[in-house]
Length: 202
Image (cartoon, rainbow, N blue to C red; front, side, top):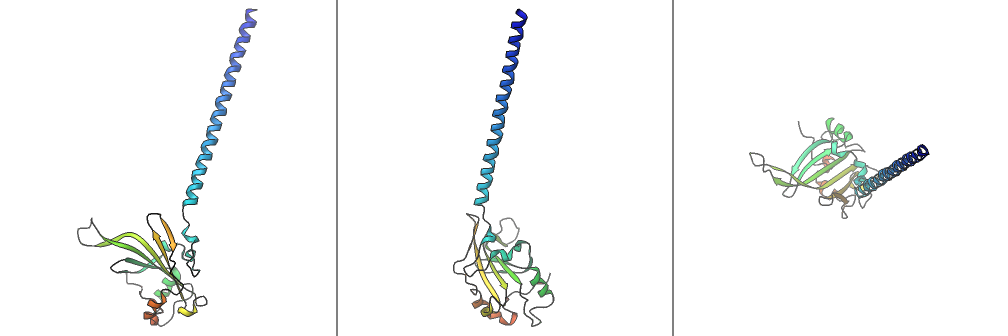
């Protein structure tokens, strides 16, 4: 009789251990699922907050996506005003045109040529052992693209400005920037196919 009681007690203890393990397993599984859901929610929130600058268009319809990859384009030249430090970059089509002598040879840049003027606030370097201005806060991407059919009234070039706000890490199309906004200034270099900067020697 005592053996039966002992077996019964042992079986109950084993069943309780199994139930306890199952309960712990369910809690652990729930915790993993809950953590995964929370992580996914955070990732989605970050994705929604992060701006896709290439979804932007200027008021005239010039798409920032036309200039995708400009961050890695070759440098054409640089310039400096009282308010801005500027680096001018161009896409491979335009760089190739520069290298065959355009616009100095009298030929126009081909359609598909694109140029971006990257503009920063300047500041004095606090590290260099000499006086030098360096880029501080990024401010604008001024863009030009050659499409003779789309922009026949402005020498074949379309112009736009995408402003950058460092505090929000957001780009916005300049509301005053129409497709020919830069043409008024660039007519001064009409004989150079509306481009101020030559491809600088390096």
